[in-house]
Length: 254
Image (cartoon, rainbow, N blue to C red; front, side):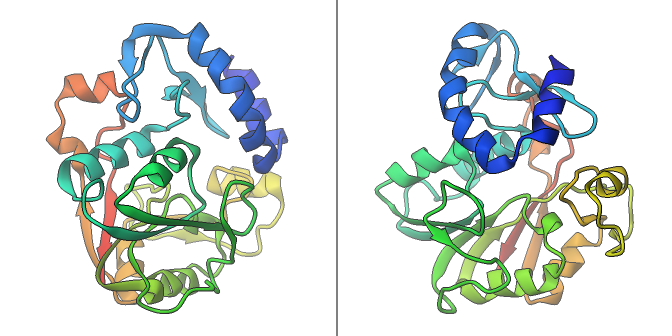
């Protein structure tokens, strides 16, 4: 199964994968029903989760019901337990919206929820993250998760995220991060999908962020809290929800 999922991820364009997943997901969720692992986003349990990864496949990573990954489930728990995201009135911008959140966030009566992306078939607004079509100081919350590693001029993208966020607003910008690296690795002469996979771990990535990622965010004006939310969760919950211990949430404020 791991080889099959790896082949699909690396050969089928992401917009097509998103469309097809709406049809396949209910069948897989039914087949994998059980009691071993639970997706905290919808509360459904399964005997196992699906593997996921463009390079090395991670076991029990992808929830069969919401299609959430480890990072999504961690973010959900943080928002649910540590913020007023689900109760207070908020104007939200979600760049490259994830399927596991889309319907839930859209249904929340407390949110004015806008999604944007240059290519995603499920986004409301077609927009370039380096040139967002929104006025400054517009949004209370901005999400852009696993986006910046695809963007060559990430500083420009960060500046745009900062610009559209209201003073006092919160942004969460997750990225794949190698915390063993002090400095981010990028080389824009590497352009082929094969070489990008070898150097950056995925065919459409242009860098691997190191620990200096937070410094990059601060350089455009953000105040950044490096939140290791896994420390607040027991080992039993980490295992039950299939989370990665030590993953850092970059919680940013303007």
